[in-house]
Length: 444
Image (cartoon, rainbow, N blue to C red; front, side):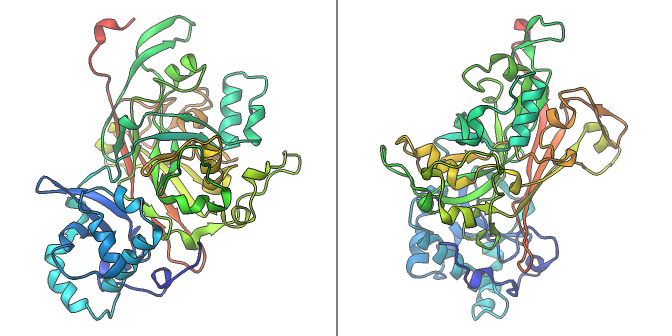
């Protein structure tokens, strides 16, 4: 299931010059899928260089055959769900034929160049929308560094819960408030305790971002029929960036059963779905468990996952305040981490999620949890960066932050990198924090 093919060839180049430029997140080896609006209708497209290949418009031309044509027809409804529910061979056939149309020296290059005005659209000009109808959203907690730090901030006797090293911990979040990159996030109102311990209701004073990666479920499983770890990778269609915005002041007061209103107000995802097939060259061995860690129970232990369950993906977060933008200062990097710091693999997350018979459905979103590492630079949320407000973050504009302020813009990025292969990106996941709206008469 992790074999490479011609679409992964690092020597492959496109006749579209922008796809060959150093630093592009969307070379011909990537070909991620997304959905955009065109004349008021949802169109499915593929990012290539600074352009988007309009797959919806391509249905009017005889460019695809066989399984690729069947895959193309599955996209007519303007979301990826129907394609995601099919065996991977159909999306793979579409990817291969599209790559052949876009490769330098292709026999169809002349025809494709002639059609470029109809099929290749300027990416920066498009309005992206959610690419997938997301029915359910589960967010995991898989970085022991993130978990331990927050446990210490809360003053817990045991910062790392006993169960953490035995099973992937998660909570069920809110799918209805997931929004595509670029959508502003409004500061929520809620209950919290102020510095004196008094209970308040009003705009959350402690706003945070969470740097995460998320997997989209492709083919689901039937109720009462768990997914074996050896088969888990077959159920992941692709990945995106995830900012699981957090109102920490609300969350830390209310969290008894798990996060609720401190999380459900909104989560942001990047617009492009980087397919599991595109990421095959970046599969890797997960970080080994500690010598004193408990052994995985058999259902969470499989040779294939131990060898290929990890992903060589670097993740970063940047901040751009209103003052920084007014001073024309570039966005400031505040976090640099890597998926190797996760204690559990996505395969283990899916397997454990379904282990009690829970049915996962096509389009479900599975969050990794905050991807924090052991170093100061790899702390992947503002609470960790500032040690829960004790050490303010200094911005290039001379401002300081203990939490996010209104007008702050957070940009998440991710790159899959491995020697001998062309690096591929995910595109940005961007959100600007706006002031709280309405209900001011209820504030205490």
